[in-house]
Amino acid sequence: MKKLMTGTGKMDYEHFKQIKFDQRYPETLQFAYAIDSMMQLEANAYPLLKDVIQNLQQWDHSGSADSKGAAVFLLVYDYFAKKLSGVAPRPVTHAESVGAYQYVFDYMMQHFKRTDLVLGDIQKLVRGEDARPASGLPDVLAAAYTSPYKNGIVKITIGDAYICFVRYPKTGLPVIESVNTFGASSHADSPHYKDQMQLFQNHQTKHMTLDKNEVLQHAVKTYHPLK
Image 1: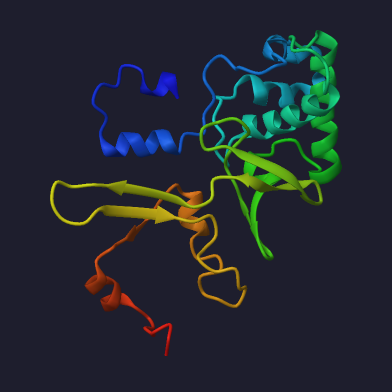
Image 2: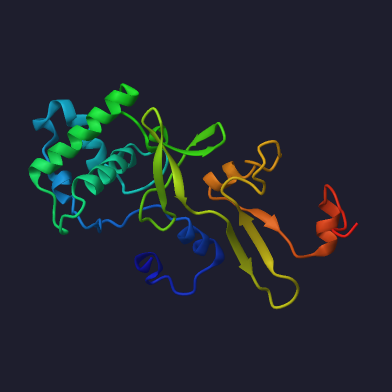
């Protein structure tokens, strides 16, 4: 956050929204178990793991759903979180680096039969039976944390939910945009059960208003709670 805001001066609204939805790590990764050694590993020395190693080493630190590096990193993150649980913060060793790459290779081959996966192949945003490729990684600003889903796929269970941007003009009502992870209903038979998923995935919002006349003009149904 500090790096994204440093030197920006007066920030415009669109820039502010870009920061809110940012899913990229800084150039220098900041984790308890430093993985710098993984980035320096000689890929050609490990022919079987070469593609996996290069996908991480060429990664731009983005958590986009179409990133191969992000797919490798997600599995590396989970691997070290379990393997080094309770171990004091430190850099990972050369042997641990090779072990992590081997784990990623084995995981991808076991569940997907290939290693050229992008993040969205492994990580999904799930609503009912609808499972869509999902962006996001742990500890980025627009963070995503996962749980096992099925067939080696994980689903996002912690992260952004309801998002609302509000601007206050000098006169008139606030200008409001919002988006929900899935939709405004928890009923599977409702048209609003998952009608916001694509907006959410695209980091887009929809118009909202406190103008009663506008609300009534677009209302599908009106009723009185006491009648």
